Length: 305
Image (cartoon, rainbow, N blue to C red; front, side, top):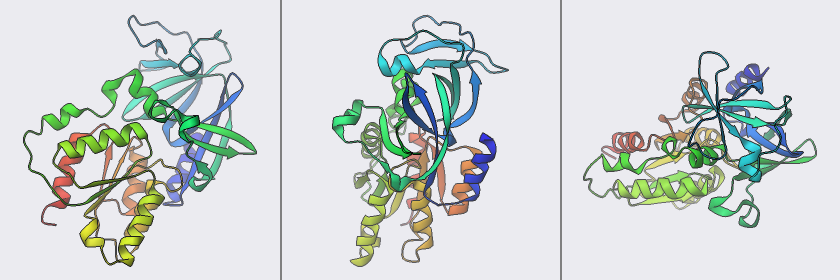
């Protein structure tokens, strides 16, 4: 059922919708984007690993691959409760990494619009330290959508953006072409902006979601300033209000904006998502950790502009 659902999303390009898988931990309702989920398995015995992060239970081998198991109840609550044989493992795949997360139950899947997902304010999310990326109402219940990228980046920093990739590019001259970036994660916003500045792209404007960037482009159109204020757009896919696929579709469908190169820079770049992004007109699609590759692609797309 999960695979067919994902194919359904694939066919509906740029609808600004998301399917949320709802699950529980200690009777609290949480959510994850179905696009990040490969499968759900019954929990199994886990082999502990020495010197691992406190929230890492260890490893298990369901078939051919060895997977790391993250004790999500322990990560969220600070204490690991009693393991139950009815617990489930949600097997995820993003940033080119497969990881299993222990949860207590899986409730179901809801399809909603990104417009219906609110970004929590700092009093709830904890700002950069928080792991709630959005709050959604599904079937009458409030669901906290977790920032799984941040969780994995904390547990295994080597899977996230590495500034050493920018260092390896060597000396680079400053580039003043205006670059617009849509990214909802506070942590990744800082990392991406710092990396681009370090690589010579000093004229970078960050937006917290696709809607904010799209509204800015509309202002530029009204003032006839598109060419002067926007040379390239970089967008995440998962964002409240408007996702990156919808943003890409809007830009590429607008005669005044369609020539702007759009790079989709997301943890969700799978073969299925690559097909969808191509349908929408994305010029390039890169997985989030590949910050050095991103800069090289920017250089190529901006050559001669």
